Image (tube, helix red, strand yellow):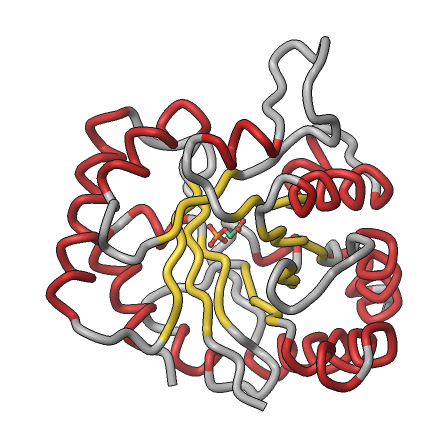
Length: 252
Ligand code: PGA
């Protein structure tokens, strides 16, 4: 089963228009000069930059996504953004359940699932994030925590085309402390087997499972060659064109 690698940049709350445009234009230029890529490329800018970035990457093959969405289509939800709005301005993906959302906005698995389902209903692909804290890892609960988040957060109607899972150990996010390829693969293999159990052989084996958490230009190749790691969700290293590009070039 060959799964096409997805290299996804999560810009988080970084960049003003000039920064985002320069980064996107730089990446788009490299894409246009590169010929056929071995991976799919995605950038997820902050909401106010999305339209600008959609224009900056137009025709390059780089997809654009949101970092979150509301579970409802529209209504009295001050400050929120719906999946339909993201779709309307040119997004094709939305990240849901990032640990920063789960932690700072108290998002439960149930909320994450509802957001993912809103994304699918709007015609977006959902990137559903799960991951254990350091305390949970130290307590030997890594597989159990991720299994439970996976089943609690995966949208109804998930297919390999509309859903991507991202395993992001919380202790590895933004810390410079990457999971070893073996630690990551162990969790990815569990996710794979749960997906096969839930969705059947063909769909479970075709769904992409990304790793995220301090992936960078140096460690990407080793992570991306693990059998069940199908790409990366990259924060810090996605803010530098050279680093993000090197990660994309590390795809097996
Ligand atoms: P990081 O962030 O690469 O900066 O660790 C990854 C993420 O939070 O998606």
